[in-house]
Structure formats: structure tokens, C-alpha cells
Amino acid sequence: MRILSWTVGVPVAVIAVTFAVANRHPVRIELWPLPVQVEAPLYLAVLGTFLLGIVLGAIAAWLGGRHWRSAARGNRRRAEALEREVAELRRTANQTSGREVVVAQPGDGAR
Image (tube, rainbow, N blue to C red; front, side, top):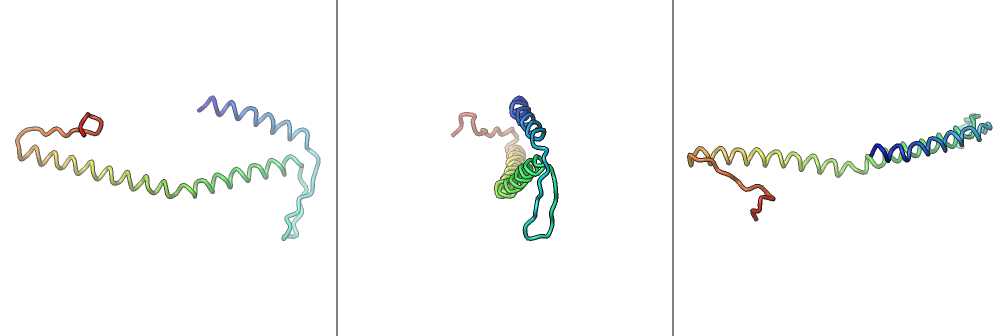
């Protein structure tokens, strides 16, 4: 993953710096419904908009995944409860029979 980050990150950074150096001309930015006008370099307007889109997209993806995170939390709680139940059943079985009970785990060939 680290190699992929460098493979993508370095060319993107080089392109962004090249774009910024080539587009230093000032432009006027008007926020339409508001009476606000800002003068900034073109590269700042373009790269700022790009960065804002990335941040908003990340927030939207995070909010969209809340269902899956909730399901994973529920599954983890259920697995922990089932593990506690299995441990309690083993303890009870060992106490009543006087010998250790071995329960086949999934993937041990038991079906």
C-alpha cells in the first residue's frame, strides 16, 4: 500500500506544483448569492476546489458507510456473546461429566 501511495502521490504532487507555478495569475472569485468578492491566484481557486471536493467526498463516503459500521459492531457483540456462551457451556459440561469436553471448531472437518 505504501508503494501505491508513493506511485500515485508523487506524480499528483508534481502536477499540482507545475500547475501552481504556471497559473499564478490573479482571478476574481464571486460567491454569487453573497456580495463577497475575493481575488486569489488561479491555482489556489482550482486546487482549493479540488481539495474541497475530496474532503466532501470523504465525508459523504464515511456517512454512507455508517450502516456497515453499525452492522459490524452488532456482529462483533454477537460473536463475543456467543464466545462467552460457549465458554460457559464448556465449563458446565466439564463440571458435570468430570472430563474435558472438546467442541469442534468450524473448519476442523466437522459438519
